[in-house]
Image 1 (spheres, helix red, strand yellow):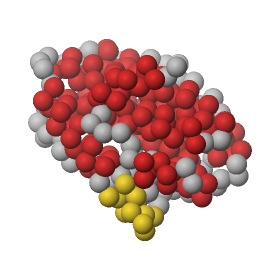
Image 2 (tube, one colour; image 1 turned 90 degrees about the horizontal axis):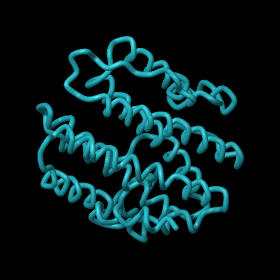
Image 3 (cartoon, rainbow, N blue to C red; image 1 turned 90 degrees about the vertical axis):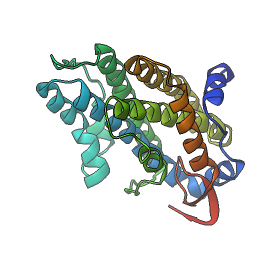
Image 4 (cartoon, one colour; image 1 turned 135 degrees about the vertical axis):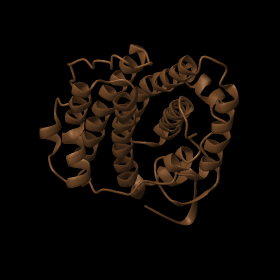
Length: 256
């Protein structure tokens, strides 16, 4: 059923996840790092969307409001403060974000990114539920090379900086979607069901990022998309000495 969702994802990405990564990720002893890194990826995805709104679209009151949204999640992830119970319901964000009066970017940027934030924070909670049910204790793990490897290619002048960040967001969401689908068949039923449930939102997130990039550019950006497609595929298909949710081909001594 979800193959129809994945068809445009596979066309967008320049490579599929290497079998070596799947073989490593499906090992029972890798489940803690798969879940913990997935948890942090959900937080980082939400933070990335928040930073875009704060920098390019929201007024000052709304900027502070968004920081408040993330505070309980960041305190859990970075300070070990809070638990499943204290995070329950925190993703039910209801207040609207007000645009800067002088912002050149449309309400569409705010609307799409706020929806993404709500979903990513809810997914954070769902991953934590799975971890708690298995007795997997949370521990902070450092970021891998993937996002940094993409971001170092961002142009340093506007609006190209924003366009590049939106394109990168599209690739990260598309890769997440592709990996959930690739890994789902090898996971326990509850995780498999959860991963499949994520495919629709992840696929929409990648499309939202891409449509925003095209809208803001106001011109054909296929050349820039192709550029990042090659960068992303290289990160995914090359040897990686760390094992993470978005890491490349694990070498024999790959560590957390």
